Length: 125
Length: 369
Image (cartoon, rainbow over all chains, first blue to last red):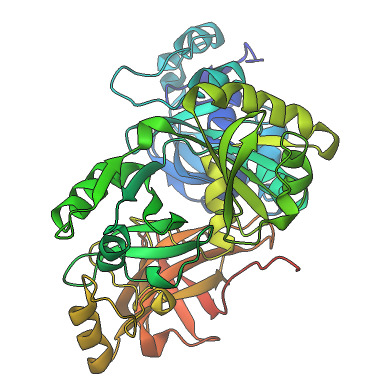
């Protein structure tokens, strides 16, 4: 369920690193806790994000949940498809329904994040 | 987690919800299911077929004796003297200043017996309030521990519940009830609900709730019945523009401001608490009102968000969110009367950004009769 090549936060985001690009999303646990997702608010391309800073929000029928960036960087792409199909976040949170891609400004930050195994034990799975 | 936190109250169906793997939340001090399979799916099942809700957290207060009507009519804003035996109506329990203690359903069981269904988190307060006003010396009983309440809601509610009772349900009119039986035991069966659909709310002894719940799920299987949580209950009632205490109404909102003039019977024979204040408010002109809106811009206006008109703060969202039936983002808000005209554009502050919405007629959803 939780890919080994991702790194995770205690706020239930994941990041996948390829070269100097980080792809960010929310975890399957997060989508499950939120329930039916009906709205996704993402930053603009070009925005700078800081590790732990808000990069947007995800709304379910019941609640609004902020998304915190696991890493610092500049936003180079956002997942436009989610504007029309926010429910994809319930269906494929670790794949198609990624949220944003950032160009990393610090490669060291990733080391402080949780491994898949640590994350699984953190959420009690 | 397989058990409710020790400080939370539980309904007689708590272990059933946990067995069914519902997502449980602290709802005003009660450990309650917010959803089972998903709010949207549960919502649509009630609109199209039938859903089952545990609403046993709701409170019950019984008023008896020769002075029962006098007390009920004095503490509530609707005209209880007009109720016939077997009839139910929606009413307000008000303060002297006209704001709400609670909104309630009054069932007339007999000339000297009224059964009142009240909100879970207000039940002790309501009971104290009614007792305090009991100059008539009627007998007031806090009866919540004697009843579990299950709501069967949707176009297939009658067909589902009928399988468990010999009481002819088609003879019960909307907002009437009978004391009959379900699954062979006493049940107060009311054709009421909080979803905008046809349906029933049944009051049974707590120890009968679990077998009845299970049998209802079996009985509704052919129709695609689903257990539904408080999440769907909220989206359903919002589409039908039914008020929720603490949102549309509360101590600082009067029935005249909440679009509930129809439960405020100034011309009834009995005096009632709040009447003087409400007469004054009516004479001076009601300045703010409850209005429905639909989002135009991207975003969802939610409970408590500020509303701006022409760049100035003007009111707040009382309830808002996505409407599964209409596919739109809808809500209710309190606004100055002049700003609440259909077609008017307002701005809702969503995370410090004004987002356009338009005032629309309500309810957002009305079932075909």
